[in-house]
Image (cartoon, rainbow, N blue to C red; front, side, top):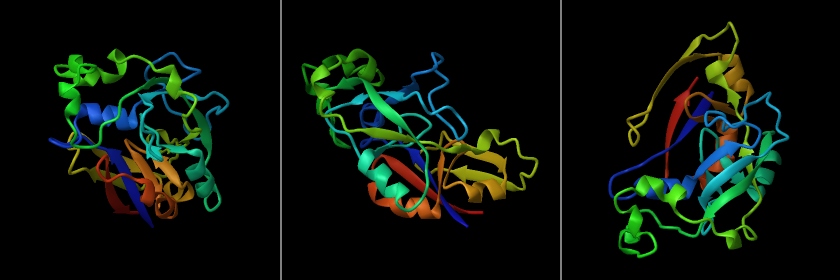
Length: 218
């Protein structure tokens, strides 16, 4: 069975840290204060939303603000017309009035964002919240994955070894259960892993500038 691993990337000259943060953003779970608890996984209580900090000037149909993939309501509905995937509501906590296409470095010459020239990684923390953007923010859902990295199954007969070309800081090597990987349309094991049928639905929403996709067979 075929799967597709989807990971956000940063590249020199096109998608630097500021573009990455504005496109994907960051998220946290409303029911946890720990910075390490920012994603829901299969079996968790989904009654509490995840909270997003990101650009509100441009919201893509699919983005990755943490471990999870987040999609807009129309994409979530399209998925569930064909494949059953659980979702948790993703709400904005802070929205930045700034959007820059990949490769655009005009923020370095903008008076509004000149403070980011030396610390572009602080774009979400240091930029002001813009309440006007909340009214037009689309309803979004975090796609809830099965956590293959913490799977308690005794049958872990497959070794995943995933390397990324654009993001060489991530090297996934983990034993997983073949049965459970095939059972769930979306798993997480260092990165989101989409079963072929879910990937077929989502591939048109995956921006190639901001994601790298690795195909694997189990």
